[in-house]
Image 1 (cartoon, rainbow, N blue to C red):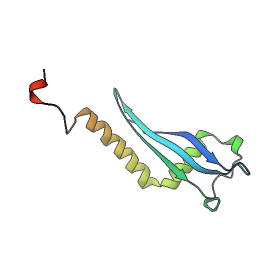
Image 2: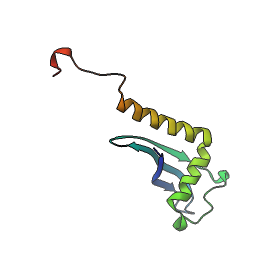
Image 3: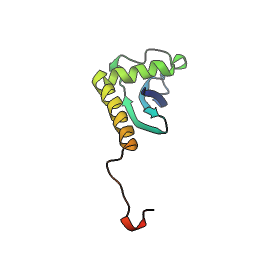
Image 4: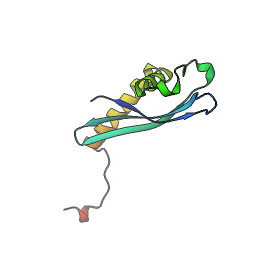
Length: 103
């Protein structure tokens, strides 16, 4: 299973097109089971990113910004959390219902 990062939106200043916030998701699929996380990553002009003209940005470039800002440990933790979500779906540790209504 591979974790896939996607960019869902960018917040930018219209005066200079500086991207101040990236809305992103990370997801993982294993057959019929899937898990995802939604979050945002803020940037300031002091961060030293966003030096590419807005019109020339690609999703891969922005994903790189997000992953660099998060750091390797956080990216690994996201991957582990998605794997855990899928494992819980595959073998639930909790259930609901009543014994008299089960077939």
